[in-house]
Image (cartoon, rainbow, N blue to C red; front, side, top):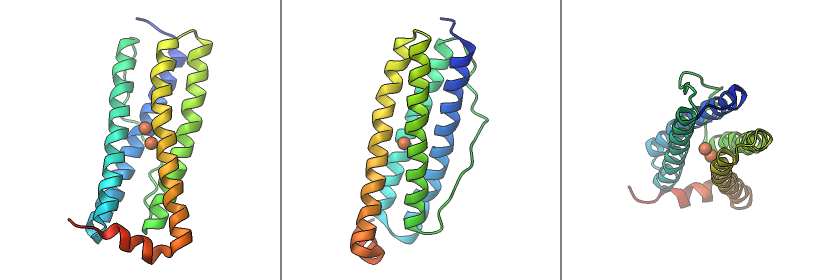
Length: 157
Ligand SMILES: [Fe+2]
Ligand SMILES: [Fe+2]
């Protein structure tokens, strides 16, 4: 089903955001595993997988709309040098994602493509959940101190 080139470009831009997030989170998740923060490793790894599934949804939708999925474009990857910086960088990325999804949902609405808007809304809820997770971690780090927070995150391998 052929659709507006502007919408395909916007979906490819979301795909590029998601590919960036997958890579950033994979690095953070493995850094946490390397330091022995297994709980945190698992939580961040799960999030990398969520973002990978978002990539798949965009690729599938772009193909359906007779566009070409572009998996070669990445945005700036910001690796944090410690756990607090990682979570702050990831949360900044998630806030950016919420903004971007809202914009493309509005565009799909303007173009009368409700089904595209619908699947983007489902992803937007995931991204808001990711922001919520990040903000909770940052609040806990502020309230209990990074040492206590990290002690909780060591867990079992
Ligand atoms: Fe995502
Ligand atoms: Fe996300």
